[in-house]
Every structure is written in structure tokens, then in C-alpha cells.
Length: 175
Image 1 (cartoon, helix red, strand yellow):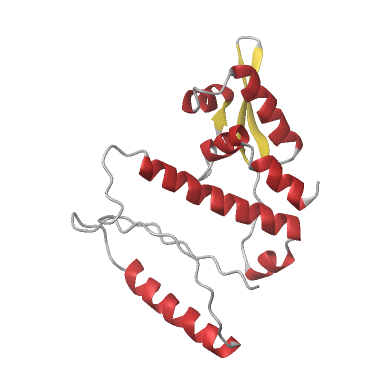
Image 2 (cartoon, helix red, strand yellow; image 1 turned 135 degrees about the vertical axis):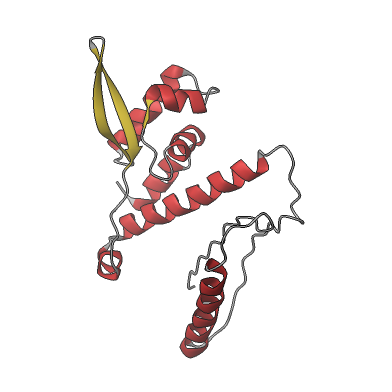
């Protein structure tokens, strides 16, 4: 399957909801996925699960025998990246799949935030933006090191009643 066709496949609203249900290593049965997505008709759910299976975006990780039928447990199929060598050896399609998983997770986190009963976008510090920077390779490396240092410092803070958990994501894409 071509990368752009897999992207189009994932961006389908029902398939996106199924994928979001399986984020963060979740392994769910059809029943559990349906419970999380009550607005999806059962026939549509099965059809879209099969589409995701055929495209190898999800996989069956377990089969349970229940009263004469087999209940399947689904999970996202993600390329395994354990080292810089693994990352560099991924195909373009695998990089796109990882990026789609990453952005889908962000979308799920943002949707969960927006679905809270009370939110205050300004007080909570919600932001998203794109900034085009013109930097030499040395200037870029310097920026990455400074940002990394700041993030490492912030990662040392332990949870307290005064501290809110905030997701900080970075994406760097050269033109």
C-alpha cells in the first residue's frame, strides 16, 4: 500500500476513532471498542476493523474461546524502534505510520482535554503553532541543545498539587 493511501485510510473518521481507542498500548475486544464508540453502528465497526487489519494498521494479539465463538483482541501494529539504527532503517511508509500514530495520539489527548467539563484554554496554557525558522546547521543544533536542556530540567519536577501535567510535543520538519 502506498504511504499516501495509508494516510487517507487512517484519516477516515470511523477508523480514526478505532485507532484512538487503541492508543497507548491498549488491547481491546470489539465489544470494548464499541463501548468506547457507541455512535458507530456494529456493522460499520466490523467493516472498518477488517479494513484496518487488511492494511496492517492493527493486529489481532489474542483470541479467546467464549461459548463456542472466538473473541479477538486488537492492538495497533507499530514498527518497533529501539535504537537510532532502527529509526534510520525504517522505510518511508514506516516513518509515515509512526508519525501518524504520534499525531493521532496528540489528537486523542487534545480531544480528551476538550471533553473535560471545565476547561480554561488560557489558564491551562493550551497552544499550538508553527514557526518557520531560518537557521544554519550550527544554529539549529544550538537551539536543539538549549531546548533539550530546558526540557530535561522540567522533567526533573515531581508531581505536586500545584503542578499540572502538561504534554509538550515537538515536531521538526525541514522544508
